[in-house]
Length: 122
Image (cartoon, rainbow, N blue to C red):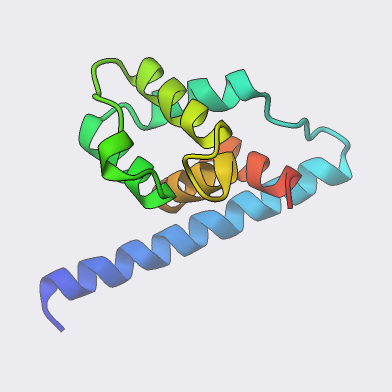
């Protein structure tokens, strides 16, 4: 296996480990009664902060199922994600906001806000 293949395998192992840690943390918070649902604003701000790179943001929007011709122009992260979430709410993305969050979580496996959103809406 070449260096690139080994790097990819290590990255996948790290991502799996992070997902596991986040699931354990959320479970612990639930047992202590400390988990709160993620609000729409909290989700918007988290996406804008965590996915502020234009290429990554557009990639996640496409992975969520937003057709290429509907992906907003990226100028400001907050307005980009607001447009993507509005598109999801209006039915332009199959699976709605959940599809956006799942796509984002695939790229940010250790993100606690995204994990909380997913776990609260199973």
